Image 1: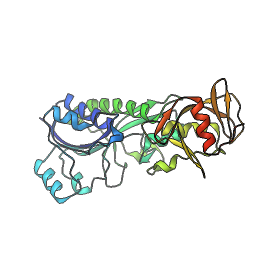
Image 2: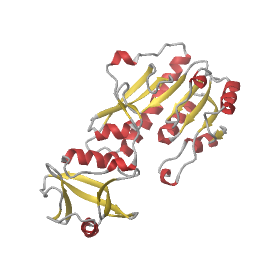
Image 3: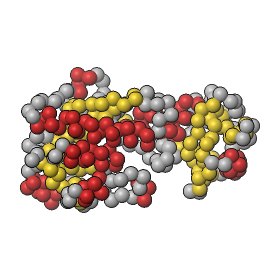
Image 4: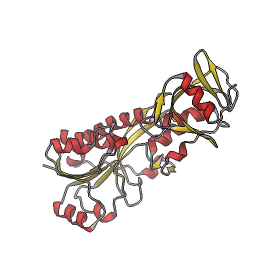
Length: 303
């Protein structure tokens, strides 16, 4: 039976691990992370692994101890399924049939951190999931397989990553048996055009600016909608997080809020957003009255 060591987390990690189990890959060990309170919205791969009697550890990965442990296992594959650490070359050299990573974009586009969030921020209508061989240089190895993912106009990072998780499962199930059968699945990324790279994101990067266009503000809101730390408006008097809002043809003066037909509007440079949910001091509300009060309290004028 083919063997693998898996380094993984997130819904993608769980779905891809399920794919390996489906095609009868023996998982020797799962290296993962403890689930934090703000990550309880998905079932981590550790839960699935334990159901199948797979050893699980959350110990620090890049150590001589772990290297010696994996080397002693002599796995056929090493997989990185949304693992949060760069895996050094000495680890990549261990597996007999290669070390592979799942990346949430159509490589070579959107290399780097938080690809799902960046794709939505840029208003893309399509992204994908890529299974590729790992090099020390991140996201640069030959591609094994890709699946395109269509993005709806109101897609969020959450809905996108769930689509990506389903695609990850299919890529694993369809590709790994072909490699085991002796097929060479390698496409050089250099043959697919120019690469793009984007770095990590912090909650502070979600600050909205009333000089932005309606589309740019909406893209920011949906890129960091729940369960991510939300986009926010900040003034000297405080801040309000915008959990959800949608574009509207109704008018509102830029930098102001207004009440139209029992809905609160926020005015940006070329249009308005209709507020559906705000959060302040960890309290989430869908009440327009709360929205008006909270916006007034931080000094946003009413039109």
